[in-house]
Length: 238
Figure 1 (cartoon, rainbow, N blue to C red):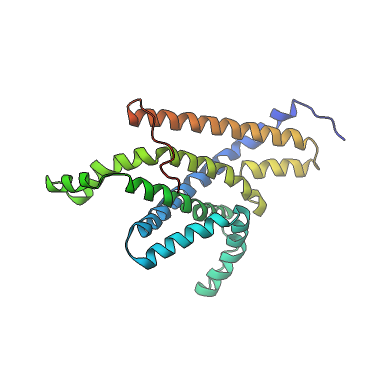
Figure 2 (cartoon, rainbow, N blue to C red; figure 1 turned 90 degrees about the vertical axis):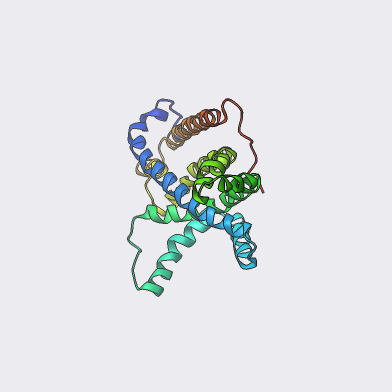
C-alpha cells in the first residue's frame, strides 16, 4: 500500500482548479431555474385553487423523498426516452451538464418553494394595499414595498440553498460529467488509485474554502441589507 504523502494534497490542484468554473456554472444555472420553478410552486401553494395546491404540495413531498443520485439517473436515462417519444428528437448526446442542472433545479425547487411561501405569508399585505392606494402600480408596489422585505427574509435560506447545490453537484461525476469532482475522479482513475486519499482530501479542502467564502459573503450581504441587524433565520422551514 502506498504511504500517505502530504505534498500530493496540493500537487493536483493546478489540474483540478480550472474546472471550478464548470462547477460554479452548474450551481448558478441550477439556482436560477430552481428559483423560477420554486416561485411557481409557492404561488400554487398560496392560491385557493385545490388542484394547484395539491400539485405543488405533492411535488414538494416527492422531491423530499427522492435521493439526489436516483433523480439524476432518472433524468439522465429517462429524459432522452421521453423527449424522443414525444418530439422524436435524440438528446442523448447533448452536454451532460444539462442533465445535472435539470436534476438540481428539480430538487432545489421543492425547499425553495417553502422558503418563498413562508416569506410571503410573513409580510403584512396591508403595506401592498396602502402602496397601491397612494398611486403606485401593482408592479411598483411589489417591487418597492414587498420584494425588499421578501428578499431580506429569504436571504439566509437562499444562502443555505446555494451551499446545498454546491455540495449536491458533486454527484455529477456519476454520469461522467467533468467538473472539479469529476476531474479529481479522473486523476485517481488514471493513476490507478495511487494517492487517492491525498487527491480527495485536497478536493475536500477546496470545497471547504468555497463554503467558508460563500458563508462569509452571505453574512456580509445580510448585514448590508439589514443595516447591521441579523436576518431572521428559519423563515423558510416548513
